[in-house]
Image (tube, rainbow over all chains, first blue to last red; front, top):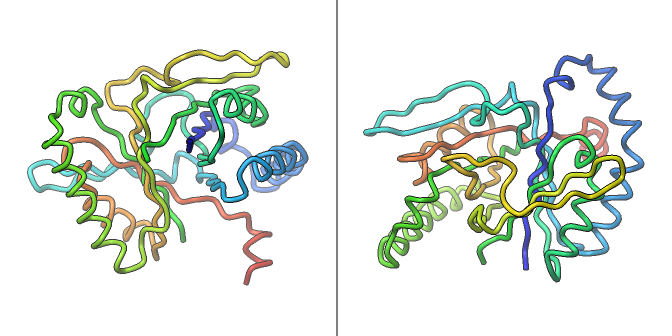
Amino acid sequence: MKYAFLVYGDDSAWVDLSEEEQAELRAQEMPRWMTLFDELQKADPNLAGYELDGRDTAKVVRVRDGERIVTDGPFAETKEVVGGVFVIDLPDLDEAIRLASLVPTAEHGSLEIRPLVE
Amino acid sequence: MQVMALLYGDESRWDAFSDEEREAVYAEYRAFAEEAGIEGVIVGGGELASTRDATTVRVRDGESLVTDGPYAEVKEALGGYFVFECKSMDEAVEYAAKIPGAQHGAIEVRPIYVDPAAEGAAS
């Protein structure tokens, strides 16, 4: 069964950091991300992972009565927004929960696991 | 650049559809994918199962907390995604506006982060 892991985190602190500070934080967390990537790769060599740019880069597009309406910022007004997505083929939900728990963001944000429709 | 399009829509609308109505929606999506796909724009995508089938995991003080249901109970939920390979955000917006779900829901487009170090290695 394919699952999507939706990585929800509060990026408001992150976007205020300088590029150097972001690079430093990234380097600090990197070993734990590498452990995660190893585990995910072992579980499904064909997994896909996407890290999204900050919420300030988001645009929302709607079409109503043929008119296009484009607004800046993310769709959700919540404190935590989707910051990344993994798509991975796994035997069952228990394995999905085990792997989702390894995502560093799970320690301060939330990981939503959703099966994909195949 | 790669851009993720996140498709938000009202699940209750979909739940209320007959099989024929659902098939009509899938046909619209196939037509969209054919149009965008021809130009090599869609490089990934998927449809998510209902938020009723969601599980949310948080880790606090080393403990995994697992709850049934989505991260947030919202009227319009994330229901699918596309990954576009395109030249600019303007182009991504063009394609997003052609996604059938844009007619009643909302499409969020966000650039996919590319590690500058990784990109340097690839070029």
